[in-house]
Amino acid sequence: MAKSAVKQPETRLGLVRRARRMTRVLALGYPDAHCELNFTNPLELLVAVVLSAQTTDVRVNQVTPALFRRYRTARDFASADRAELEELIRPTGFYRNKAASLQGLGAALVERFGGEVPGRLEDLVTLPGVGRKTANVVLGDAFGVPGITVDTHFGRLTRRWGWTAEEDPVKVEHAVGPLVERREWTLLSHRTIFHGRRVCHARTPACGACLLAPLCPSYGVGQVDPVKAQKLVKGEEAPHLIELAERVRAGEKLA
Image 1 (cartoon, rainbow, N blue to C red):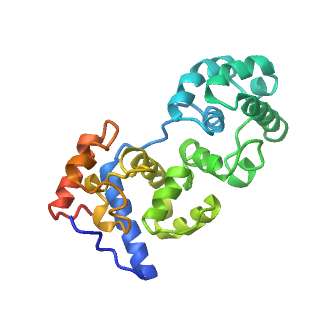
Image 2: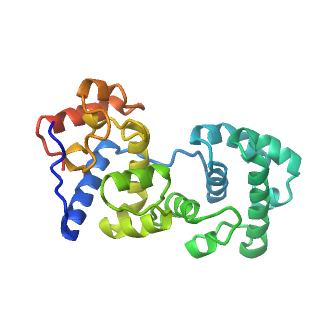
C-alpha cells in the first residue's frame, strides 16, 4: 500500500469529513467496544476508574470483586478501615493514595450527594480523585451521557490521525468533540482505546494491518509489511481486524 492519501494542509471541512468516516470505520472494526472495567452500578464504576490510574483494567478487575463485596455503599468506603482498604487494593499500585481518595470520595458522596454518584460533570469533578477523564467515563457508561474519555491511547491516536496537535487532555477533548456527532462520543472513546491497545501501539503500530490506513496521515510510522504487521495485532478481534485491513488493501472502501 502506498502512503496515506490524506493531503496537507487539510481544510476544516475535510478534517470533519475524514474524522467522521474514520469513526464509521472504527464502528465496523469494533462493534462490541465497551468499558473494560467490570461494574454493576455508578459507584462501582467510579471506584474502578479511580483504581485504574497507573495500572491496567485487567488488574483492577482482579481486585474489585472482593472490594465490592466488602464495600457496597459510599458510606462503607468513607468509614473503611484504612489498612484493610489498602490491602485489598494493593495490587493496583499507589494503594495508599488510592485508599485516601476512595475514603474521601465516599465521604464527599455522603456529605454532599446523599451517598449517590451525581450524574453531572460539574459535580463529579469536585470529588476527590476525580478529573474530567474519570467523570466522562462514569457519565458515558453509567448514565448514558455522551462524553469523550481522553486517556493515553485516545490522545496518542487522535494526534496521529491529525485530529488535533494538543497534548493537554482537556484541550484534546475540546478539539475532538466538534469533529464527530455528540451521540458518538462515548463509543468513539471506547473504539479508539480498543484500537490503541490492539493495532495502533505506542512503539510499533501495525500500519500494514490497519483498517484506517488510507485515512491516516501517520501511515508508515510503524510496520507497513502486511505479514509482519498482522503479527502485531492483539486481542480476540485480531482475525476480524486483519480481514478488514486486507479488504482495505485490496482497494475496498469500508465506509
